[in-house]
Image 1 (cartoon, rainbow, N blue to C red):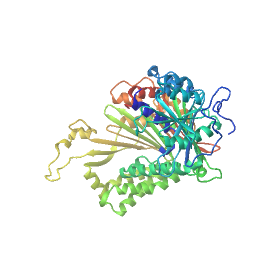
Image 2 (cartoon, one colour):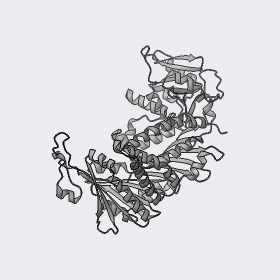
Image 3 (cartoon, rainbow, N blue to C red):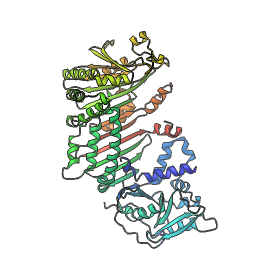
Image 4 (cartoon, rainbow, N blue to C red):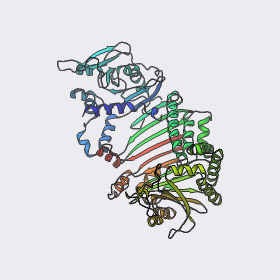
Length: 596
């Protein structure tokens, strides 16, 4: 195994205990404690439990590393033939340990880990792997003429630090290793080893055994401290980018994210788990509110949840389906910020009344619809098509609201932005065969551009008038110069489709429920079924079919879905998140080494 691969693997393993930063018991762990009758400790050390260190961030548990490695090899499939057969051999290979010590690594005893973070300093982490006899392990790697390591006791932490003899003086090793009791400790450096290692070895073995393959537990102090800080920072940066693009209106889920951050700030604990099944990889996240009916409890009470029928009712041609639910109060609270973001996009020509017109149109549209929106995406030979469906509480209000939104295109500031982007917007009705109702068309068209100095037209943007009348007018490079948005307002729902030629997409969307729907796909339906009626957000995507269509190849016979969802448990109320990835997708990712 190459040096870069070893480094990435170890850093990924250590990263399991700092995952929360990217989001920004009475039963002991059987076999974790030293067995005096058969095991020899590295030294007669005090291994009694100690408090969590300052800045304690998270604890990691891998209850059965040998069993997990067996599952992982089965999941990988064919390439697993080139991987170590046992967990001990895997650890020895990655850590450049003598092959003989693989038998000393006990894959039946949990791997433990922890992370901490103090102030603005980087997070520190350490992982502990159980060995059968700490003293014997040290002797095997540090004694004899061929020994590659030296062993030295660190008096403060009581860790016997292992150093590679071949390391260049002053060079920083890839990882730091040491032994405390009957555990081999691993960290990115010796400072982290000493700071985190004693807590991992002395305290975590007495904790309850999680049932999942991998578990990361985050305490209250970390949730309301560094985890919340990092999550807020990440979302602030992301929202700023979305606002600059005017994206909040196109993907109006920012209110839900704000609600999630509110729950995070008032939660007592969180758990992130991973389970490997033969067919699917399951990741789970749960966040439990503090007792007392605080902000988190109230936010969860207001959280809109329901079943995933709106996704299953999308056309069977959809390669992606997304559903989110937001209560009216959450949506209404976020509208002013959406209006600010869109008004800011209008530049110096914008007037105060322009922002008021945008605000009024957004509020009118919001008041006319229900509490969920379903989006879908399909790929055709000509290009991608997007689709949207939403329930209505008042169809007449929605018709009026959409006219208000389209009227914004007549504002002088909007016209100026369109001219600058060489775009034109036209509206009107269109007819779709076998589809009743007044279908409205909004056409976004790349128009003839003029040279700023000479006023000459750019020949690359000249449009063929006959092609324009058909809808998708091609440019000289074959790319269509028009995108159509078609929408239909019925008594109960709003249907919309956008793309170079979205007529068939809209017709399929309106007529989808039944045999022609996404719900008729057994794999997709089965993947979404576990969500029940408790999902607030759900996304299902079929990446292998998307790749096949993009490459002009035949789609795989069976779907291999990836599902991402957020929801809440009924009683006691808690927030959950989940990611389910088909094993076939994992195998393709490994086969192509991240070429996706």
